[in-house]
Image (cartoon, rainbow, N blue to C red; front, top):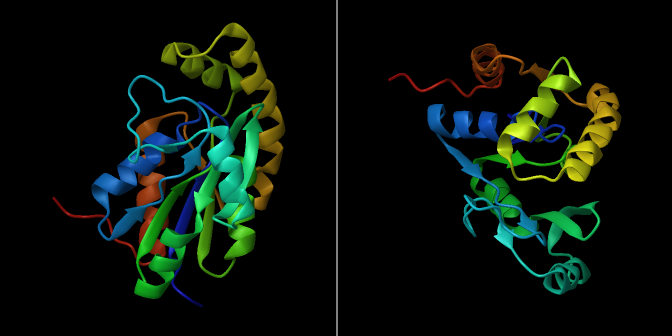
Length: 193
């Protein structure tokens, strides 16, 4: 079996996938990070080209027409997200590992595109009340958006069975331990300090 190059982290909003991707970037060597494109506005702490490439909806739609993305979708009305194709092809060519932080449908679409090279990971919390607390703590969403994200989370949790592994993330330390074992089992040892 080929050594996986792509590690896709997917989860309902607030489950902690971005936090776990940052952990892997910090404690494992030899990983690039796939910066997704989005048509939504940046949040106050986000940087263009680092967290996302922020583009207009028109620019995003034009990129769809040119087959720019491996996968893309309209996650919320008017908010498109997509994975650019070229960095993925560069990683295959150079045999470099790549971390991807994708929504649930995007993660499954990416795995379908590169099944032999992808480990698709679903980050899950045991109770939606934990998600709700995390979303409220962000203080970036209206009440209507929080409720929309929670409803979507209920549906997304049903998709967990289609992923290669489920990372429990009620407690961050336990998620880190799970990730250490999982990454090492695929030939990516944790960096020793």
